[in-house]
Length: 342
Ligand code: SF4
Image 1 (cartoon, rainbow, N blue to C red):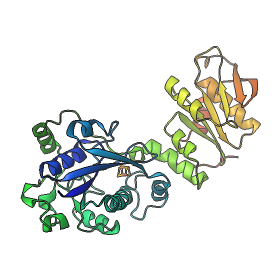
Image 2 (image 1 turned 180 degrees about the vertical axis):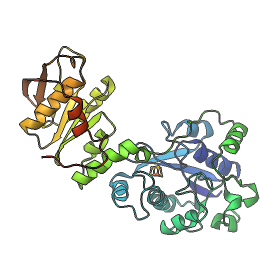
Image 3 (image 1 turned 120 degrees about the vertical axis):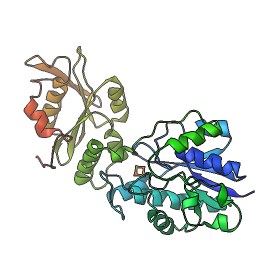
Image 4 (image 1 turned 45 degrees about the vertical axis):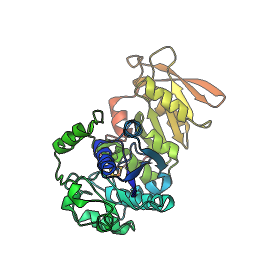
């Protein structure tokens, strides 16, 4: 029985690619890549919350693999450039194919499959792009894309007779209707709605990441994880303030805080948890307290007492809530260009 490794996101397309291969008698093991930016991607149709859901129903194994710093490196310096935002989609897919190639060798598998559909994504799912990515990843001829296979050059597994090309599909373009019809035929009833990609495709998130990478060449994973939480303010090149937007974010910020981080909140009022990261001065604490007060339920008062915690230290700081001008001046998301303050 031929063996294949599938790049698997848990989305519709990558699941279908696996089901098509299973139907053709291929033993498929899926690999799901994780990164710091919210989802993997094996088919670009979605970010999966539960990559195991379909695997249980349709009986295939899933291996999880975190791309970690390798992924961060391509975000910082993508050979093939960023997409519209900070998403290095081509480099990302090459990296995944490269990692999958190692897994293919390790498991004695014959080839790779992906759920890519020709023309579905302008940056990385073009006809000229597939062979380029495969070559760069050292898997030339070894990547079968069953959903568009009839429209693509013959692959090695087809040449070897491991897969009948006539039974592949010719999906092309952005419509998901053919995939939905195929899903129905397979009895695949639950799959995530299509999503635009990982967090790197979001303009506001990308702006915050650019700011982080501008001021910190080697950011801690913690700082990257904080990017998805709260409102972000740049106090100085080496100091940031993050203000939680709701209870869930407050809890997540607290969980990510280090002993040395400053945590602020307004006692006795609905209050965001506010964290200061980096080199903290008295002025930074004063600004953070002011921001914390501004986003608390006490924001209408002329002066608010903010509790400041750092490790075992605790004190109270009376401050006026931050004005709109202060927010505009320091908030990272709102800035059209990066500014440096001291
Ligand atoms: S959107 Fe692009 S960069 Fe982000 S995970 Fe998908 S392919 Fe990779």
